[in-house]
Length: 161
Image (tube, rainbow, N blue to C red; front, side, top):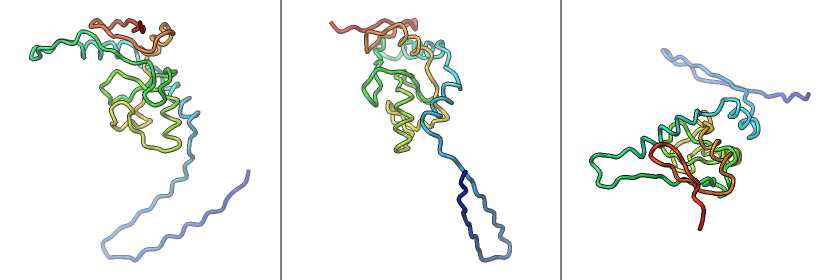
């Protein structure tokens, strides 16, 4: 192991009644593969959480004249337009659409912005969670790129005609 010497010089002008403090942090940049591994270890969000979100979104608003009875959601990542492999979302996002965790983390490794590709709100790594319902859907629905959620939280594949 090679060591690299570093020198830090700190100087200041003393002022009566003022205190100073300083901290030095030695940090290591984590690769996208390590971050992805940690995200998987963190666990998968219970599918019932997403089902509750679906039901909430499809509950009729008594003040609205238009009732939404279903929601269409893509199984393609909005970033790479490829099928989701590890569907994730930010804990603070209110939408159902997921993005692919691998691609999102890799893109932020190159240019860190940590912004949700669906709603453009902040989506820092610490707030990412793998969506259990979408994991189930991707497992059972291998031949379509879009699904439709129904009022009861169930889903059906949307096949092109």
